[in-house]
Amino acid sequence: VFRRTTRLGRRAPAAIRQPTVEIHDAALARRALVDYADAFIDRPAILPLPPGRRRSDNLTTVPYGPQWRVLRRNLTGGILHPSRAGLLAPLQRTAVEALVADIAARVGGGDGEVLVRDVVRDALFPVAARFCFGDGIGERDVRDLQRVLREFELDVVVEGFGGSMVASLVHWWRLRRFVASSRRQAEVFLPLISRRRRTQHRDDADGGVFRPYVDSLLDLRVPVGDDDVAGEGKEEHHLSHRALTDDEMVGLVSEFLGGGTESVVSCVEWTLAHLVIEPEIQDKLRREVAAAEADRHGGERSTTPAAYLRAVILESLRMHPPVPLTMRDVRSPQAVEHLSLPDGGARVHFILGDIGRDGKAWTDPDEFRPERFMAGGEAEGVGPLPGPREVRMMPFGAGRRYCPGMGLGVAHACLLVAALVREFEWAPTAVAATGGVDLTEVNGFFKMMRTPLRARATPRGTSA
Ligand code: HEM
Image (cartoon, rainbow, N blue to C red; front, side, top):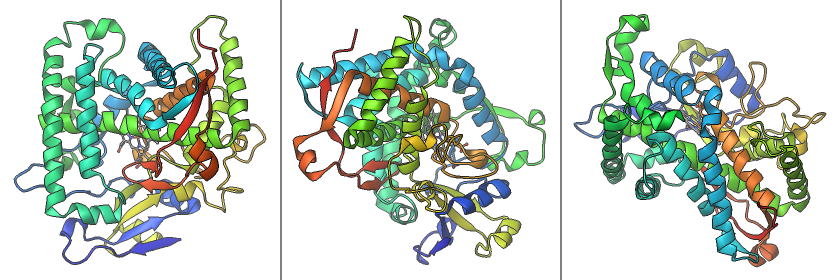
């Protein structure tokens, strides 16, 4: 059940010279993250701090404590709260229209090949950028933001994220690239943040439509104290507070834009790959999406995805969780003892793809069968987030640090896949038709297709 890895040699810095334990098993994942929730609460440091730099965390890296609570509450309660999901509808409509127009232009009236991840990313990224900085940012700003995030991914994120990436990151040159890439992000983000600082209270938050993430960060005050040690055991309102530093703002914005887009792009690409290979599932899905459209009677598009669409997305997330693994730094003596972890604690990696394909929890786990999530199926009632009793899959993690963007991520994946099948028929390209669509995975920060999906799109002519 445990696979203990000892990849790091004695030359590795003390902070990461820890044994690594991998969990591939759904039942054990539940035991760890539910029974020992308090012990599985912090993530290990991925990078040693560059010389002369102070620690500045985003939500993913901040240790559990008052600062984490304030940042998390701001995102979940203030920005991503389900009651505000409807406010994003105009941005999402624009994204869907842009996606359909882009594909239609590429196939030029007839059918043609489309590189799926590029068109999806180009449609989705502006939504994340405007949700972050407000509706006022221009197309050039959006392009600059996309460029620096892409550079970060290409320069810093390498195949094999996890133990081996941690090892390779400690090479000085990779650390130097990381610092250079963060500096380039700061050069693009900070002027946009300053512009927002000058205008945020004047333009009534974009006409009262939605509150950009950056506005909430500018107003936020976090508890004072390095690594939150000062906050241990104190009520939050007894602590003194400070504004976020520029470095923290850059990290939080980078996390919001990068994590919120690429994960959805990965999910949509994997989903469409299966729909290309299995035309009956694509057809069934299209019929359901068309029926839901017909039910609209000219009203707003529903924000609740239809049952089969949701099942298709869940099946894709089960088989190809866009984030390949999630990590915890475990030091608690109790958890160490009861879970037979190495003395002194361990870095624990939960391998999300293996957990979703655990043969003890799923029938034919390598088959793409959305029906399992429908009424009467083996996974009826299973959702994207595990409940307290069992873990069958955990594409958004589990326990206290589960993904706060889950609702938005699933909504965006559903919206984009629905538009893709409603407007186009998807088939393998001539090359793929003989060689098959390549479902080989490659694990970077995100689980992507090793051969990016190219598919033949034929407009269905249903668009208004
Ligand atoms: C399909 C889309 C997405 C997937 C599959 C995904 C997956 C994940 C996973 C596996 C984790 C680690 C959870 C854990 O350690 O237990 C995570 C954390 C996180 N995600 Fe997502 N995510 C998605 C979308 C988003 C979006 C849209 C946002 C923000 C707008 C977001 C923001 C975050 C943040 C801030 C964390 C760290 C939370 C914490 O430590 O408290 N994610 N995500």
